[in-house]
Length: 253
Image (tube, rainbow, N blue to C red; front, side):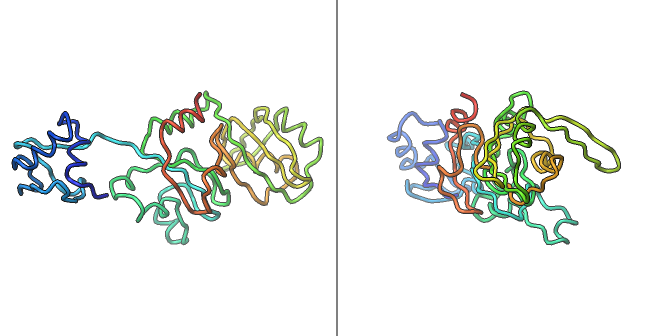
């Protein structure tokens, strides 16, 4: 991402005013990659060039980035390994590759994961502390999904979901059993439920409905706490920048 020289200098915190920034440039005290630059509108990429003021290297404050992605179907929420590349898998990170600076791209992480067939609300950030805060199971952050099923969802199913569903799965030769926490759920129609959970075990919603002898055909995350995907007008595969303050307000207040 390119910045004008005066913008870069103003962001470093080294100068008390814009007038002081301009004067330092005009006086020849600023060098970029060793060359004096007296043009305040000079554009450059701070990630690729070294700026000095009277011999002292200037840098921008460390800034984290926050994005909301409308995750499309068929994408996985991890960096691709060799085997996944051989299987022609596609990663959500590929959507960011040419849209953000290389140093930002390399430090992006998803806030939790949606499985390959699940779509919708996904935060992606460089802020590891925020990832931990949101995914910490002790916080019971609420996530809402639209669940479309193969068979009608009965009143008995709704009652069980509200109380907690007993789930038993075999993974890598070992059986794991747990009961889900009580969830909020209502029907849009007989094969579609709006479900809010405050935990996030692996493939939890699909396993909940499998335990009720039903199959999830489509799963779409609608929101996380008060942050709603539809408010951002994003098509599948699109993302936008969001402010840390907005995330804090929606998820933690």
